Length: 212
Image 1 (cartoon, rainbow, N blue to C red):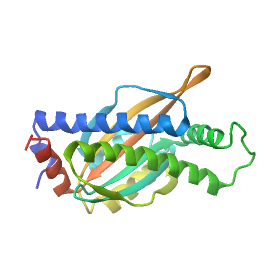
Image 2 (image 1 turned 120 degrees about the vertical axis):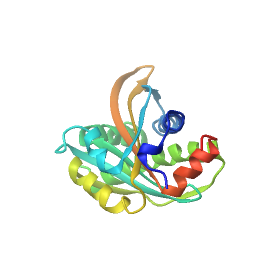
Image 3 (image 1 turned 120 degrees about the horizontal axis):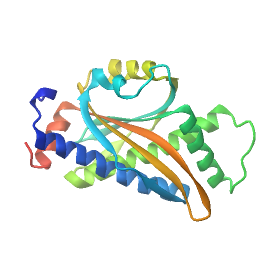
Image 4 (image 1 turned 180 degrees about the horizontal axis):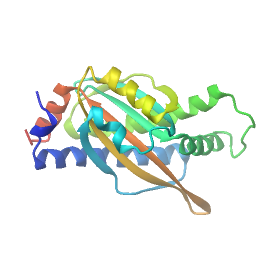
């Protein structure tokens, strides 16, 4: 079984490039969903121990919204899209304004907000995964998204407790999106994708990329 210390530079670089490709595809899908231009900073991707994830996201007391999905199939993995609550609310506003034609109802019920967060997260994670499966020639089936609101540290504790049983490494992808376009003011929205591949899936990925 692979462990973090066994990866060479070529393998790490290949995994980072996969993260970049997946994020680019996710940004394109988000642009279509919101019907506006999305500019994306160059994503930063890292392969880390699952037990070190919290160290990469700043203040552990930051309130965040997280969307969880599970990919079934040859390339089995768990994926999480994490945003601080402020950025998640900005994304919800953009989506609902698109769906309501610019009109935003007041005092939205939490169920509607969570539904919008789940829709955005599902689009981003599905598109991220689609790019990877297209790259390595595999198929997948994705589970319905789940949404959680909590402090960052609490979310990470759940990630380790649940997903640590399947593998002990995670691919972290961080980028900043600028949402806008002609005639629209741009808004910077950050988001983080965490991919936790199953041990055999990570080996499959490296074999398909011809670096194992």
